[in-house]
Image (cartoon, rainbow, N blue to C red):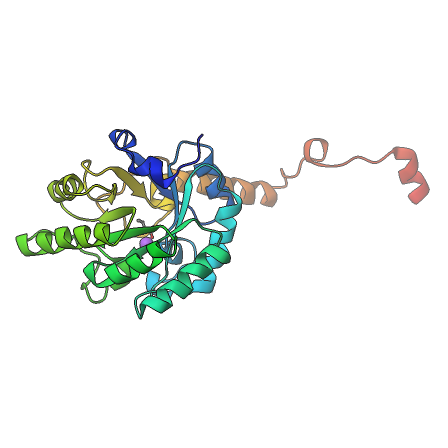
Amino acid sequence: HAKTTIARLLSPRASKTPITALTAYDYPTALACSAHPVDITLVGDSLAQVCLGYPSTTRLSLDEMLHHCRAVARGTTSPLLIADMPFGTYAPSVSDAIRSAIRMVHEGHVEGVKLEGGGEIAEHVRALTKIGIPVMAHIGLLPQRYVSLSGYRVQGRTAESASTLLRAARALEDAGAFSIVLEAIPAVLGAYITEQLNIPTIGVGAGPGTSGQVLVWDDMVGTWSGHKPRFVRHFADVRKEVARGVSGYVNAVKNGSFPDPNREGYSMDHSEWEIFL
Ligand code: KIV
Ligand code: NA
């Protein structure tokens, strides 16, 4: 597959075919994304919950994120490699955002960063774009703000909330974001915001009218046993296969059928064995 460039994502011709994005958190998932026409691999901070067992994304540190970014980078070829900036690493000030984003590039080996927030972080987006770090914005449901949002709730359902989101999308495009993730908003609003922008939108629970879709790896392959939001579809049932494998292995060891010395063992010349004895 051809390397995804910002120019290709922005080209009107490309926007006719939906953009595919998937999260990855380690080398094997990065390889799997690169083996298929996935346009964008995202090291989402969902990493905190689905891989590290934290109760929310706000617990993730920059160092933890960088460790996983490097592993994903080693397995990424054609997809554009973007990673979430963890909670607390960009919002405090524009200079914090610049310092953290440079670490994401230098130590995480990513090609661009994603930031959650609306007009209030437009200045940060502008500063990063200006120094040559591509920024993907993220509006709608913002998991890093689940406490202040009173939980993981659909956004943009009232006229007031919808216009706040539209204003935010315009401000972020204006600030130089190359794309915007729209999370958990009504499908009509997802399509409307997409029409109003020149940059592509990537939806997760934003309906089919966005320029592309993104899903969390573990939701997509069905390994995650936690809460399943309405917008998730399991395209595989890896959890079932894992259960089959683990119970099969445990049973075979317990009942002595694994390993089979003829199939899974190494032999030794009888004469050498005699000498040894
Ligand atoms: O952290 C994440 O996985 C994300 C995507 C769902 C957009 O932000
Ligand atoms: Na995220």
